[in-house]
Amino acid sequence: MSEFGFGRLLARFFFSLIIVAGVLTTFKQRWLHSLAIVLAAAILVLNWMEEIRPGGAVSILNASLGLIYLGFLLAMVVGQVFGEGPVTGHRIRGAVVIYLLLGAVWALFYQVVAMTIPGAFRLPEGVSGSDSDALQRLMTYFSFITLTTTGYGDITPVHPLARTLAMCEALVGQLYPAITLARLVSLAVMHQKEKP
View: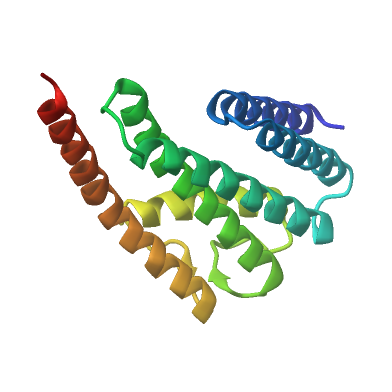
């Protein structure tokens, strides 16, 4: 295993630990802890398998499980941030985490689409849909560029599914900050009115 490959795997391992720590501090029910740990362990095993044999079905399964895992975490954090109660620093940090998780979830969507539908994206020269590491980096870049509606044009969705995903992400990127700000302000106002 090359030194670069070991560093990449180590980064994946620490990312998994951070996610598990977040899950354990966020969720109240014990069965959610168990489910989150099982998903994180499965993703970690798939990361090892992908390191040994990159590309193909393992990469698609790894990205798909990562998508489920982050979607699960996103749903839990959304419940915490937009629920009733006073506006705190934790709630505001949670709103930022939601925005970042949205970008990560869409990046995995794009990665799965690019790996399963050849030519779904027009990629830079020298990058193929079978190179899972390069594809992961490019789709993460594309996702956050789309979420912030910067759109440099160096990666272009070509397939209708890829275009639809990009359009939805750009809409969420514009609407989420406005809706979140409105909700947090309304919660703060409601909480101020309840104070004696």
